[in-house]
Amino acid sequence: MKALVTGSAGFIGTHVSRAMLADGFDVTGYDQKDTDEPGVESVIGNFLDLESLTTAVRGHDVIVHIGAIGDVYLAATNPELAAAVNVTGSTNIALAAEAAGARVVYASTWEVYGDPVYEPVDENHPCEPDHPYNITKLAGERMLLAANRLRDVPVIALRLGTAYGLGMRPNSVFEIFIAKALAGEPITIQGDGSQGRQFTHARDIARAFVAAAKSEARGMPLNVVSPEMISIKQLAELVTERFPTEVTYGQPRPGDVTPSYVSASRIEEVLGWKAEVSFEEGMEELLSADRG
Image 1 (cartoon, rainbow, N blue to C red):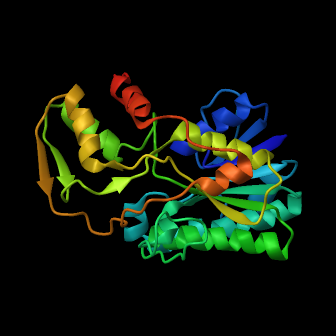
Image 2 (cartoon, rainbow, N blue to C red; image 1 turned 45 degrees about the horizontal axis):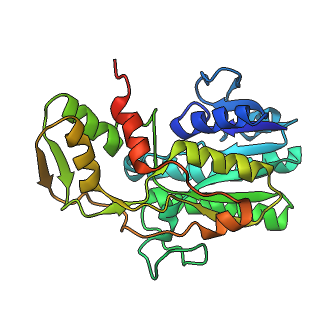
């Protein structure tokens, strides 16, 4: 099978491309910069350009649509860009997939749910996003699922947990904490540190994309989350156990999503997927990584 991966030069895109290659896919990377992963054919493109996107997609069996404005801070300061890329760009993906007869696997987010009405949060939970990032991600998801209903484009949306692993952005909480500790500087926790996330390793996320690409399931969102809820305080403690430094506390960060416990039972039923990388294993990889 031939797969085109948008956002292939990014953190999750790199892990997904690598996993798809290992599973026997022919992989084309589609991004605004070269994809460095060996074995991936790299195409420079912008999915706001429907004509070039349609040309790039031709001949592929599946589009794995990861490319997005995924930085919540950038989405907040530049909401028009987030709307263009995450909504119009995803609409163009649907149209290009229709022209190519391709399946789409979309990278959505658990943050589309907003404040929890009940827990564990399953895929039937109401979606009430309240930030330019999760609003536009949900809008992109819904445009694609509309194409599934109205244009017979097979679409499955993966609502990803908070991803971590080697290759994360420097402004991720993991990289900030580790860089501060290595420099002997204090780590500052915003709020009291009790806020938790179901941090989900990028390798587990990549396996979910492979399973979704190979499946015939369509027309649905699926939560892709680890069962472990880890607080920011626990994360800081793991870092400072390895690289001792002071931990301080500051004001809560505005716009932080309310912690919610999210269920991954449906994806286990539909795709046979469940998280395999424990948080301790994932953290050991990060703490042992060579940072030059």
